[in-house]
Structures are given as structure tokens and as C-alpha cells.
Length: 474
Picture 1 (cartoon, rainbow, N blue to C red):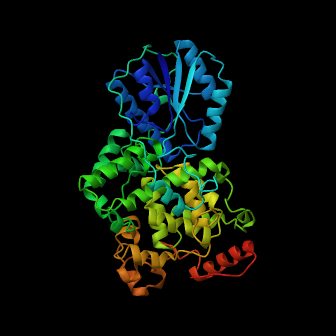
Picture 2 (picture 1 turned 45 degrees about the vertical axis):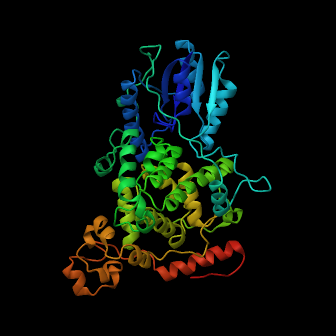
Picture 3 (picture 1 turned 60 degrees about the vertical axis):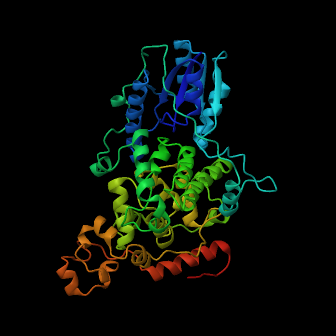
């Protein structure tokens, strides 16, 4: 059988059900359809590099990757007809846009003789598997996590060892250098210097995490100034790495003595699963709050403060360090990500969807499910979200999780000479200390764009307004 395999956010060879099944049925034609948008994003750069890596892997197996442009139904039908393919296999996705594309493909593909098969999405379990006792989707992570732990996660599928193809070339193939994807970001070279996307690199990153960090993960993960996280999010988001493969690799590390405490990291993978699960069952959450009272939230239209936040010029060192890290590396430490997002939503009262859009543009690990649920969690508008009255204090968060200022000094070199005592609140430092550190507030580093106490009260008042009550807590 001659089978087209439609690659999507599954740019790898291992645990690729569609590819494995096709390889066992006969000849395989791997196809990737370029995204239909013109605005360059950090994730586009990761995609371009992942495709290059996948091309190389396929070449080593005696095959190649056909890169094309157009609507999936039209393009795949045309390829099938012109190459005399017998079948089309693909792994499903759960985001609304991809699901609509799948529906269109299955309903409108007029290649009636084509054997079309949709394989499960890249999740630990089918999203319809876990339900409450009443048969409804879980809305609380704790209950979801408890149920997930009682399930048997299927083993990942091995990569094929060879892939033969029945055609040598295709006239409408687009070379990657002419694809429109950004092979270079342009806005900051340090992103390209920080990351090497692709399946091969994902295995090396995992090995480092397993050997050096996993056993200490629970103690290190909240401290941005040290190497204490997996740094695997970009590989998972692009599909360079399989979530099932990683899940079982963690358990294997425990059995081999490399991970005495695997649960904290597995719990983070479960949060990723919960995000996908919620997006599957509640697809409107990309643009709409899960808690409908938030439809009436009095968001502020403050473009000047938004720009300061994007550029890391809020006057709050931890927030600014995080936003600079994002711009220069395409990622941000998770603890700082929560603080920076909370600052935008609760200190500045700027709509969480605007923050989500900025992260979509700048994150190399952009993932629509994780990004959406993360912002809804921070805003308090998700089902199982942070309490509306939890308003992170960036200064106390700095002191607690960056005690010696390693992270802040790395990303805000203009503050590097400040002693620890004044690093977290430069505006409170004595004049002589600022002079000694060569800092001119308002020139070399901004004054805070908002007072924490004032902003906190304003946020609590806004939340009380939509709840119809006056309440708050520290």
C-alpha cells in the first residue's frame, strides 16, 4: 500500500502512530503543510529548524519530506491523485483550528477510494477516557490527577527502521528556504544560540535532565537563577518529543535509581495533559473565560503600560528580568512566567488575552493549550484557577526565589552592581548607592510604573465588582 503521512505537531519518528502504521503497510510519502500566516513568531523559527532535522532523519531512512502550501483537504487530495496514493494517515490534534481542518478533510476529500485513518493525538490518554462519576469532564485538576494516576498509560511506539517511498520527486514541493518560515528570527540572535530544535536534541536534553536534575527537581524548580527545570517544553510543544515517551522515561529512570521522587515532574506533565483535556472539551476557552462572570471584567486599555511590560521596563526587577529572558531566549522560567503574567493582569488590569497573544508571538515553546490555560489560571477565570485575590508581589517573590539576585543580574545587567539589599527595589535605594552602581532611575532603569499596594487594591475592587461583593485576602 502507498500511504501519505501528514505530519503536523508531531515532528519526530518515535511514538508516531500514523507513521509506524504506514511503514508497516508499505511505501510512505511524508508530507508537511506549511501554516497559513505571515507574521513571524518564535515558534515559527523552532518549526523551521525542526523540519530541517526531520528531513535529515527521513533521509537517513531512505525517504524525504514533502513540504507544500495550501488548505489540507485540497493539497492532500491533489497529492493523492497525482501520486496514485492508496491511503492517508495522520495523528489527530485537539485545538479548534486543527479539529476543523480534520473535519473538513474527512467530509470534503473527494478522493473516495483513499483509505483515510486518523490516529490518536499526542496525549497520555484519549481525552474522552477520563470523566467524573456523573460522566462529565473534570474541571478540577486534583480530581483529574487522581483519576489519571489510576490509568495505564500506553507504551510509546518505536520509530520505524526504514521508510521506502514510491515517488522520487513532486513538482509542487517547496524548499524550506523558500517556505516563508523564519530560519532566522532577526529580533534576537540569542534565541538561535540558546536552542537546537529537533527530535535528536530532545533526547539529549532529556538525558541531561534525568542525570543532573530530575532527582532534585522538587527542590530546584522554583528558583530561576539555577538550572533546575527540564527545558523540554519546546520539544513537547512542537512534537519533537512524545508526552507518552517522556512519561515512561521518567518511570524508567525511577526504576533504574535515577529518580527517587518522580511524582513532582509527572504532576507537571499531568498539568499539560489537563490543559489539552480542557481545550478538547471546552474549545471556546482560547478566546472566552471559562468563568462567565469574567465577561464583564473591567479591563484597562493602557497601551503605555503594556509596552513597558513587553519591553521589560516596569520597574519591578523580577518581572523585567522575565520579559527580557523571554525576548532573548524565547522562553521564561515558569515561576517568573506566573509572576509576569499576574503583573499584567492584576497590577495593570490588562486583558489576559492580550498577554496570551504576546506569548504566542515570542515563545519558542508556544502551545495553545498550555498558554491558554496558564493565562486563565493566572486571571482566575479558569475552572481550577488561582483565587482572584492571589496577587503576586513581585518584590517578595524576588526575595524568596532569587535570594542572591543571580537571575535578575543575568537579565538586567544595568542593575548588576546593586547590593542584594537594594536589588529588588532600586527606587528605595539611597542616592549614594545608586550612584555607586551607576544607576540613574528613570534613565538607566525605570521607576515602577505602578505602586504595588495601590494596584492590589484596584485589582481587588475590580474582582469584587464582577462578583458583586467586596472581599479580599493577602
